[in-house]
Every structure is written in structure tokens, then in C-alpha cells.
Length: 122
Image (cartoon, rainbow, N blue to C red):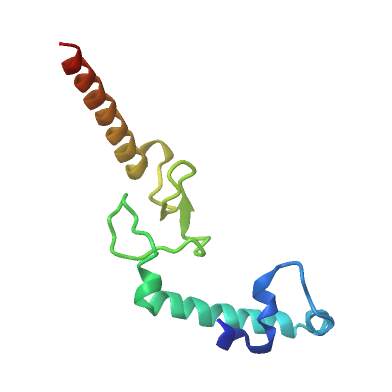
């Protein structure tokens, strides 16, 4: 990231700290241009780097092999319960596959614990 941002690395540290030079660049529009180039460079890295791709998500609704990333705001939606990401067009909240799977695990654990307790009481 230091290579991409160079002397402007402080822009990654906080969204609230700007130098006077940054404010001049805001005024003349060059900061937006710089940030767009940096963003495109970082996105290109993320979608091509095997380590970064491993942190992406697959849509469990359509099972398409496309890797989804949280920064794809127009394309993805995050389940508020399990925090997984899905294609916006595929997502149905009440049918989230991960939430349903986790609920199934929970119910099986409860049933297993109940039967174990019942066996101990015999």
C-alpha cells in the first residue's frame, strides 16, 4: 500500500486527518484523481492476488464461482445476522443459506445435548 500511496500514506491512516497540501489538492480536484487511481490499483491487486481472493465470498444462493468482495457496493449485500456477502440480486434475507446452516447446527447441538442429558439420567 505504501508503494501505491507514496508520500500520501497518511490518507490511509484516518479519514479525518489532512495536510494543507491535501486541502489544496481537494480544491483543485487532484486529490480525487489521485484517490481514484490508488483505488483502482488496490482493487486490481485484490482481484488478482491469491491471498486477497481467499478472503472473498461466494454467493451461496446462485453458487456462481465469482468471488465477491465487500467493497463491491452495487453488486453485493451483507447478511445482517451472519455477516456473509451475496449477490444483491440473489439475496433473500429469510432464506440466508449460512444462517439456515448455523440454525441447523444449533438445533442439532441442542438435540444432542438433550439426548446426552437424558442418557445420563437413566
